[in-house]
Image 1 (spheres, rainbow, N blue to C red):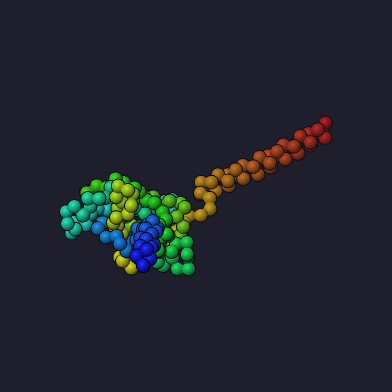
Image 2 (cartoon, one colour; image 1 turned 90 degrees about the vertical axis):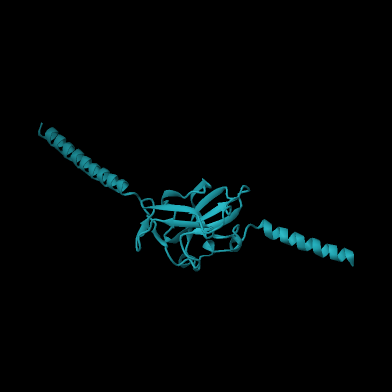
Length: 204
């Protein structure tokens, strides 16, 4: 009977360890960071062109020492729920090791008790969608211990609409057109020169 109890306890312990190994649960983190960003209501941000200035810092309403384990801040660009519908590859999961909400890294900085900011040009590989910004605080073991975000808990306010710029750059199109015109003119000049040369030879 005692051996059965020990076995069950061991299995329970292993189960807990296995769950822990899957990563931190987002629901276990405290929202101790205040994160804000430059934002114009109704603006559509273009990748590779438009910029966002994100700022973060400790919410001063928390007791002194609340940030004693914070070593690094990592800011990420995250999909809003409206852009996750029917897209499993963007799915929100409570276990951060499986979560697909925040796929784009913005900046990583050593933690400072004073407010910090960073200007980020939205990268060209960011697809068209609606986003928000989230900052995670990491401890010395690089494990998430707290967070903050630009939106509310339902992720419905202060969102960023992004339009991906596809196709070639405008300068490439201009160069292509110029090269085509030059080629046509060169070819026309060649035929005219050949025609005159042939006429001249015939007259002789």
